[in-house]
Length: 377
View 1 (cartoon, rainbow, N blue to C red):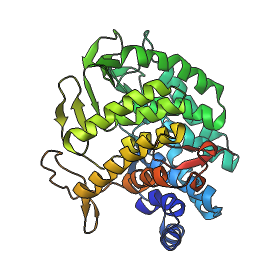
View 2 (view 1 turned 30 degrees about the horizontal axis):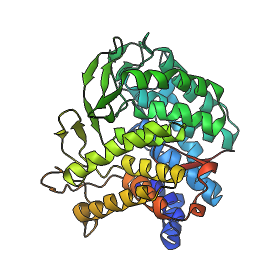
View 3 (view 1 turned 120 degrees about the horizontal axis):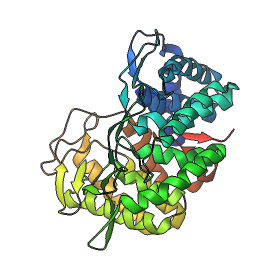
View 4 (view 1 turned 60 degrees about the vertical axis):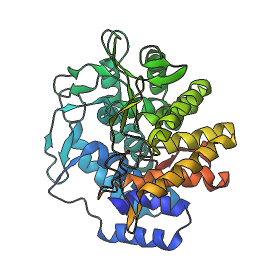
């Protein structure tokens, strides 16, 4: 997974020798004909997204061929009574398992499957992924919120906690981005129906600061006052959709969370400023938002913000062999872990924040949730 996830970063950073080596490794050795069950969501955003983006950057049709083969092997995941995808699918047999999933995993597939449709001329990929988005949206509560987990066989919500954090986050992200990339007016309309509700029930004013917490999808009642590393993507999405006032305020809160311990925790109670989950997994979301806000405002304060975060990132996470996740942001004890998204996203967004705008034409690409830039076709 790692070479595919990293390839477009290597290309954008002009690490030409490494990019050539990674590309050769992928086209020579990567095969999806394996009797293994994979998590559809992660494979889609990391591998399918990475192959499509790298194909668009290089024109190497072998990468597109791999993407189409993978897409074919993932399609059985949608064979549920509702059309919502199961969590896992076997790449060789098409066998599916785990019916309880979440809106992020049901509705964060259309950028990749849609791009695959456009590039191969096969509508089935777009249609299956789009149907899953619509079926997720249709099940929102009377207030207009979605819950944290849903059963793909019955279409019933398993839990009713609503938020913008992991499990729901990229559901909202892809509503806007699929409108941006494909001009899909249904996605625009679903976004326009959703974002006012998110701002009404999930946004939370505390000490004059803007945060986003948790609420019950049925009643709108506040359930938790937690915000974390995954939530920090939301300023980028707010900025991308034109809400700069909220984007800037929420980014200030995210940066406050980062500076609390010199590196951000996984989860913070923003009412008490108490760290609920103290690990740091080298996540990219806060860097992504910093890059977006610098792009849109040109304010050098965002580059200074990025510089502070990068210095901390190197100080606490660098090792002799890569960058290590941190078990606890207070002790800074390192873990033997570096996810592929560090190479796909964290380094890419740090680099783009300081690179010339000509490095990547921001207005001509849409980043998937794994930071793979996709061009309109």
